[in-house]
Image 1 (tube, rainbow, N blue to C red):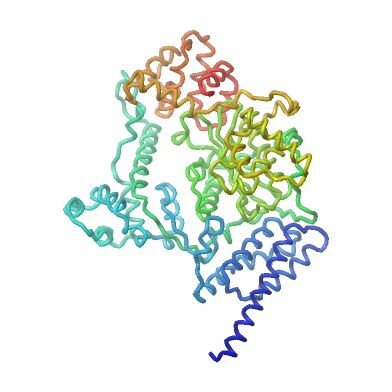
Image 2: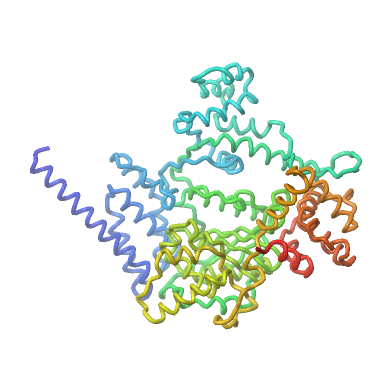
Length: 621
């Protein structure tokens, strides 16, 4: 191209880019400009941008995120079809940029992944990859090019694959440069490589974790397995298979094309839209005390089939965001409840199936839909009236009424669990989390009424508040924010009127199930020479005698729950002197942990004062 024409072409490209950048800045500014005329102005911006040919990945990503934000927070009904049309065809814009030879790596960042037309790659766990491979079998494959150049990975293949491929050990035990993919191709026939491999793991005979009793109680006579026992054995074997598969750390790559599970199109049509015709609710306008004092929201139990749909939806939501949460991968469809709130907000919550539950704490996971768009995920784990809450708003929606939605999340969780003490993990406020430090996450919780669980940090927070009151321009230094993030923060529903100038420490401030577990393990090292099987057996014998419990009639999941609880109960020296009713109630709590309704288990722990007192004594530091 002659110099004059090349210069003219670059000038046009620069002008176009500048125009796109200016329009995007106006579009992003509109996130805070709801009110009269907002819908019409937004329509004009979308019309202008829809005619633009994007050449820069960063600019296209900005356009994508703004479209999703306004799909969740629309200022008017006329925008919905226009937003959905742009999102439904967005993959064409991604394909255009790819054909231009642009660097596509920008589409694979943690906060920008999942856009239609892009490709994702991750080493998923067995349960997650099995689900995804069934969901999109034609779009997923093993990413061999990023795997076979690591000698540690080849060692894992050599340890596991001979179980599936006859005579492979002839190669794997002694040879170098083993053609792993040729071995797989020779064994799989016409099956897809990943599908064949997953099926081999599903069918491979394994034993349950030998660290547990596998439901066998000393002195119990062998009898024919019931259906429940068979299911328990299958679940335990599945966990063992998952451990074998996960040892491979096998990366998979999946194409999103224009699939509904892409983040671009992973939204639902709500029963009724809520249109934001006024400015969004700011954090300063939210009183957590007021919101939590309102009547409990209605919890609607979903049918198992509707619950299964919710579980598939959240697995899609997480998969395209490079997130793999225990409760979203393994949630129990039959436990799902829906909470329909104001402002187009719907929250779903659920528990774990009995065979996948934690040893002691009850577990809740969930997510929020805003006008049918998933905007966050939720995790809550607890005992008695205490729950630890994790709340993660997806990057795209962090300008959208986060404090008000968080308050509704806590309302819903308290109604679901019966919790009265809420704590937040240090990670959420900045411990080993630079993003939380940069955003000043500690102050998000502090201004809602949370207090620090450490008295020295509580005093530090108050000194910072005094500085801010004296100088509104004061900004807490990062080194102070990192100190403030060294401990949980707490909100006590029954102590909202405490004078913050006094000592307001709570009973759960230094409690942790990790403290309980460490105490058990130190006892194992001291009294049982570090032998897990011996301490488990001794605890079962001692605690069953102390409680007067005959375990022969308990099902396998109940016996496993008893085994785990016995490790803690064995630490209570006067357990034998508890009243008959107290012992009976403890046994009922343990059996409830293995029953279908995990929330009944949690609520029963709230009704046993003596057990609660011992847990606090043993688990507090």
